[in-house]
Image 1 (cartoon, helix red, strand yellow):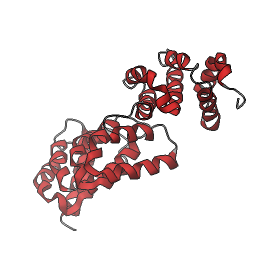
Image 2 (image 1 turned 120 degrees about the vertical axis):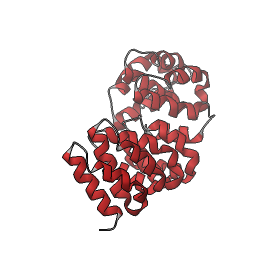
Image 3 (image 1 turned 90 degrees about the vertical axis):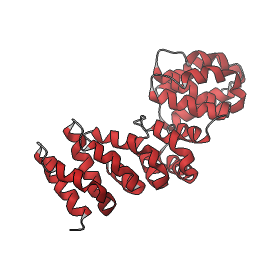
Image 4 (image 1 turned 45 degrees about the horizontal axis):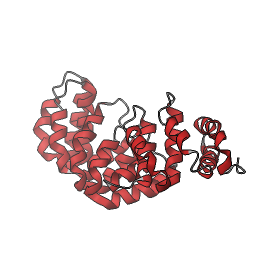
Amino acid sequence: MRMMGEDSESAAPAVLRLAARSDGHRRASCREALVRMHPKVMPHLVEALASAKPAMRRAAAEALGELGDRAVEAAGALRKAAEDTDAAVRAAARAALARVAPEGDPAEALVAEMATKRSFDRFRLMGRLAAMGKKAVPALIRALSNREIEDQVVTVLGRIGPDAHAAVPALVDKMRDAGLRWEILQAIAAIGRDAVPHLMKALESEQTLHRLNAARALGHLGPMARFAVDALEKARKDDDERVVKMASSALASIRGR
């Protein structure tokens, strides 16, 4: 594959198909081959962005990103792909746009790039996002819907701390999930007292799991959640025994017992 050059653009569809079904080094090699086919590869990449197969659309977006500003003619197609129904395609298209036609929110570009990287590279990007502080929060809130990077996004919000208070409603809403992750509790604790009113409201949710997790989070906040004492006392009369026990535990944590 490394022998392919600009005169081998006819191989582009086959290389794209290989990239779409490959991972790791093989997919990276496919991207390198497609880049060497520039500029004649461009129609194939733009066409693949409209493929019925998400893996093909993602592979095309990733290759365009590698081309950088040499693929500026594909910016319009990439903007359309940035609203794709598939989360992986959206992330790849947004990351590509950040390199092909840089504009707009730099945090959005970093988040999009994070979704296309491996663990080590994601860690580096997380540090850059955290360093941006509250400027990164809107992009991070939007990224909470991306299951692929959800845990990393929550971790960054926790690192930002109180300046990430705008993310509290979205974080609390995620507490409806059965698999409440430690990262969410940590992020809420790092944000601090601004989370308390939202958690108090969640204690009145119609969903038992939401009430249970809200009580757990208030207990995790400890004395910072002292304004929620009355709400937790009310929760001790909940119809669900698990909520009753969690509310009692939270009260003990708040009161330092």
